[in-house]
View 1 (cartoon, rainbow, N blue to C red):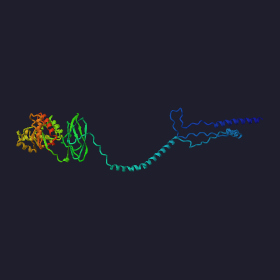
View 2 (cartoon, rainbow, N blue to C red; view 1 turned 180 degrees about the vertical axis):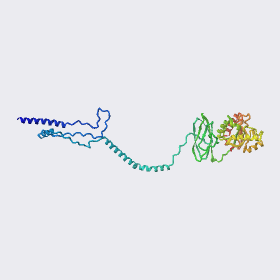
View 3 (cartoon, helix red, strand yellow; view 1 turned 120 degrees about the vertical axis):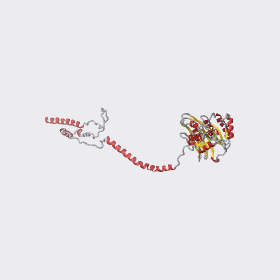
View 4 (cartoon, helix red, strand yellow; view 1 turned 90 degrees about the horizontal axis):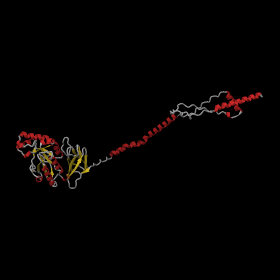
Length: 440
């Protein structure tokens, strides 16, 4: 009896021990994500490059089955230390983030490479077509240049002379446009102070003066076109200007009608020469100015204006001397000095002051290559005459080939200016042309 109780006590103790051992072997530790940062850490977790420790495999012991063989096995397990569990690595489960990123990058590069390789095939036809399209463009005519814009210049029917007035600011370019017909001569003459000039783009027919810009333009086009005319200012102050425009068809042949030669002596004068120039421009008339060398030296800007507006200049001695009272050497000096200051724009004409000429003076003039030019009619404007009287004398002398003497210097010539205005008004509609007598 006592032996049976002992065995029963030992069996009970074995069962208890077996249960304790089974409980310890089946209790699994809590699972922890390998790359999950600790909540207490403020820095971002760095992915591990080392494979995570394998989780222990839970024991699937049959200790839960209450059978005698299980008790025996449990007793033996309690008597012997548990054998270590084999480590099983599941490569499909353990996936690092870096290889995933690299794989994605490789796929992206592969796709990009595929796109790049496909691009030439797709753009090949476009590349081959580019030279052909360029060749087509090269053969096509270019777009015409835009038509010039500006204020229009128009000649009313039957009118061959118009005037245009305006004011130009410093640095400004006032633009005008006109429809130029083929084989028609257009002439534009600008009246303006120094620093204001005329730009017609081509065909400027003016004297060349150093440091000066043209104020007269004459052009004939072989084909009809719209042309640009500009008044350009380099002056420091606003300037008033006036343009006289004339038109003449070359289809009518050489100019017809009487030609009158207006001539002016003793200038340039600081007041009256400018007034005479304004009148000549307004009526489309050209003239020859027999200038005094000393006055050219004093008023070079007026001398330049005479030339720039299409007129010509000739020799009237240096100091308005009476040549019949001079020696041969003195005649040479006054003619040479005056011809020198006229420069390249000097013509081969000479008019003796007072009309005083003897054989010696004529001989000396011929030796200098100068032709003596006198007159066929005089306005007698050095006398105390009214403007109406002066105008009557000018009109009376306005015959074909007539050379009319007037003065723009040497005294008060205001009545000369008024008489000239009246005379040009009377003859302006009679088909007369006023040209320079000296042209070379």
